Length: 148
Length: 205
Image: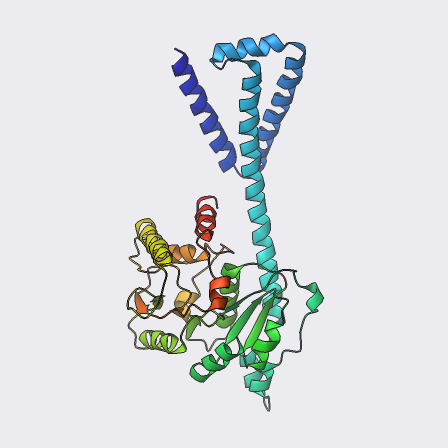
């Protein structure tokens, strides 16, 4: 009997976590996560006053102690938070990349345009870019060079 | 790096260097050598630099082929030239360098095994039977380059590129190239541990 409950619990935890992680940052999933957080906080407070209730619930679910139940909930919460943060971080990185690329392309000299100017000096225009950004603005520690 | 640019300019009409937020004066050296330099205001990673380079080169309506070439001198200009020639002959839209098609490249056994495993993995995942999925020397015609959109900023871009090519289905061939492992490129290149990072970048995107 217990093993069935335990398998069902593990499955529920995995499916729930994956669903919440996959949900990303849209408003509906954000709301669900917040409700769960409130629920978790509520149960935590409740268990301070009625510690045996939680243990009874844990026993019923086949886990053992109430503390373990809280621990499992905490682990799931932590994983979901990590996934959400990771997702947001990636979005942010994407935004920064697009912004930086735009700046880089704007600032770069365009040798083919200089070449078509009448009396232009294409070679020099390509070699000397007057729009040198302030070197102090660059990221510290970065230094990879890639050629295309 | 100045020598790399100078040598490239003997074979190609335009050389574009992407400066990925460096602080060591590399852009000045590249410009002095005759390259056009595009500077990322902050460090973004190799994949982002590659995509910026493709973007920039495609802004020139006269661009017909684009070669990606590592600035640390690990590639041979003669290989790059031969690869472009295969595109110009109409043989392929994309020519990918592979260090495993001949015996010129001296490579440590462990690195060989990891790279071969990576190639097998990418064959299994994308259906593209590459022998060397992580080779920086590649040549594209302009039409194919325009359809590539890399979003993996760091090292996983190589796998991402293969994945996108497998969807775009251009005519592609592999071309034998030599990789010269200098002390600099060894220090700068991918350590074997980095393959763990690549895998996790791909799994948790």
